[in-house]
Image (cartoon, rainbow, N blue to C red; front, side, top):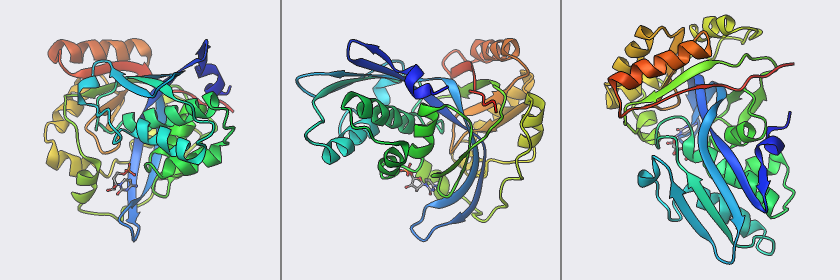
Length: 304
Ligand code: C5P
């Protein structure tokens, strides 16, 4: 199924998209390029939960941010959504009529689950359709990569939602042909981490690559594989946010099959056996920490 089409609900000419949370189920740092960017190997999945973005033709451009994390989001030209809009407009000035963009920020910012990149990917895909630009995925990824290393994976997440193996700096993508839907909980205690600072704090940059992926037929197969993997950014993030370890311990107490930090953190995820166990664990965390961001959701699956 093409998620791009299914996720676009045109009300009049308003385009509404979910900008899903990106979850690095595993993230190995295997080297560094001459320009300072790190070489990665990552298994990435997309959640059924994310920010929401609405784009409507208008007489004048406007950008509004709503939702629980709106306060921390810049609304000027530093926002990746605005940069995505302007990057497309610079290439197609004649077609790029003014738009009102409303971003409902439901994901914590600077938290390792790709919120800003996913928002920008949604903006690129929505504007490509609204302005009838007819850009293919390759062109969108090229424009996306000029905005951030995670943009290409988020564009694929937006279009198909399928899990991916990412290499290079995150731009060399291969979809995983079979992958179960994982019941997960995402949690963040309010800590935001700067990605460049986390990369700078790395003590080692030449770690071994991901083990060869098996046939991911069940949740057990996925968890057994993930136990052989790492998030090489975790130790660096822990030096900046020591409370991370306690969050992973809480997940373990709540019966998680596997726990890890996503991206450069500080959001962590836990995989559960089923949705009921995930909902119960989310309630357990929420009861102890009412002000944390805690969400029970599922990752999107792939079937051959
Ligand atoms: O590309 P993006 O702006 O999202 O990356 C933010 C920062 O994260 C980069 O400037 C770089 O310091 C770091 N980074 C990295 N290697 C990657 C991705 C990001 O060093 N593969």
